[in-house]
Amino acid sequence: MTVRIDQTGCIGSGQCVLAAPDVFDQSDDDGLGIVLIPEPSADLLPGVRDAVERCPAQVVSLEE
Image (tube, rainbow, N blue to C red):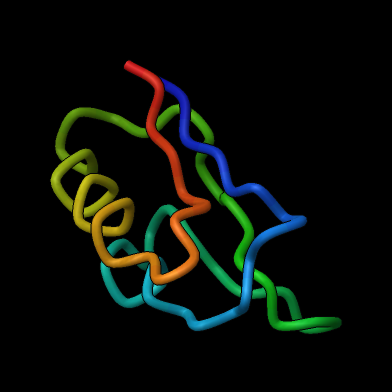
């Protein structure tokens, strides 16, 4: 499973970080979301799925 953020559409709301702080962070430069763990373990997947649902710009994806 691979986690991605489409940087071109990210608005930096930080919802992904709130949902899964071990997997996502925000860039210090522009505040956009970044993926820390592109292939998270199974125990992190519920938070990643929550991040996909929470993202107001719908740019977080999980390819299973």
